[in-house]
Image (cartoon, rainbow, N blue to C red; front, side, top):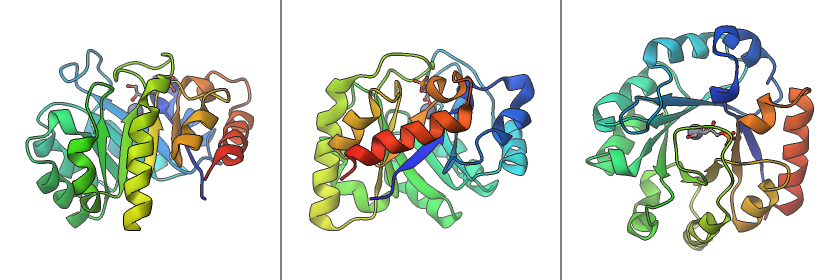
Length: 220
Ligand code: DX5
Ligand code: ZN
């Protein structure tokens, strides 16, 4: 199975963003956390910054929207060329309509679930999505501890994806390190976001390689 490592630039140096993007050329995608200080208690940036990241990044953009009223704002991120746009189920009024709006604009559609949100209500909707993001921390900040109790959600998703022969990537975000990535891979994840464990390392490319090796060793 293909393993994808998506470093999160939430842990990059925001005034040296281009430099820090150029350090992750061996990554599969760059994870771009958009926060509005409303859906989550933290603020990052919006479409103007994401457009510049898109222009200089060596790898495609995996945009993670942690914003309210996301039905309204998500399509704009697809229009500026993001490879994937993931929005929170808790922030959307009509998850299917928003997913379709993303796909119509050429982006992969992603559905994100906060730790307190059960997955069961979304299993029937998986054909509408290209990826599902299981949060393994409360969204808002980097550097938090991995929540291993989210693994049953991944297993439930993996079971439906396999049983129905779906092409839906299963992503985890929060607390992913060389010590936790294998747990998530074993539970069925194939796409791994890592912020502090990549940008906190002295050798960023080495950190990406180590994460990839640890995930591959446990991948299905
Ligand atoms: C948190 C963000 C994550 C964050 C992960 O809400 O969605 O993408 O960057 O950071 P680490 O990998 O440090 O837990
Ligand atoms: Zn994220």
